[in-house]
Every structure is written in structure tokens, then in C-alpha cells.
Image: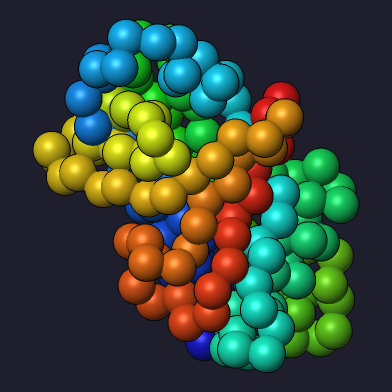
Length: 171
């Protein structure tokens, strides 16, 4: 099913982006407590995209994320620790979308997930992540209250056509 592949790809890319954020040096070169604002566990809750430029698959991915979040089902979670280590937990690979073919949009929350370890830095609006393989990724990010917002434009989300943001909420 093309939609399932695209949705999985989008959420896997989200995990890559967040993993990328988690994969850089553990230190805070600025010497201030800026990274403390990102410390904690964050759940992906919303995909904000430009509906005028988004592809059909991106719009479906947004809808599925909305449906799951409304059920308190979060298929992508990021944990940033004070020591510069991080973890991305992604259950998008385990989504059961088989009911969609018959019009059943009651998507069950997956009970399985994949977990990736990384290191990160968060400075000057840039989240840099180094994964277990040593691959470094950087994305524009901001923390506002209990929200972590990752920018899709100009990021590692190469397959995402529309501009937008992936919004995480702190637990």
C-alpha cells in the first residue's frame, strides 16, 4: 500500500531527523544551561504542513498522526538526557493500517517500537544528533513552553515536499 509506505517513510524520516538531533557531541560549548530546556521526553503530536503545497501522502500522514494523538498514542518519542545522550523510540513500522481498505480509520496503537541511541547538542536553535553509526544530522529546532518544534524545511526530511513543522509535546 503506497500510503502506508509513505507514512512509514515520513515517520522514519522523523525518527532520523530526531536521531540526527540526538547524534552530536555531548557538550555544551557555550557553558550556559541552554540544553536544559530540551531535557526530557517529547512525544510527536502534530505535523504542521502547508496544505496548499503538501502531497496527498503528507496530508494523510498528518491525518494519521492527528488520529493517533487524539487517542494518546504517540508513535515517535524523543528523550534528551542532561548528559548529552538521547533516545528515539519509533513505532511507525508497527502501525496496522489494514482496516483502512474497508474504511475503518480506528488505527490501533502499536505495542512494539524500535529504539535508537544517540548523542546530541542543542545550541543557537540547532539540534545536532550523532547516531550509533557516527552519522551526524542537524535540524533547526526551538523549545517554547512544553513544545519542541522541528522545522521540516531545509532539514534531513529530503522526501518532504511541503514546508512545515513536526511538533513534540513534553511529557
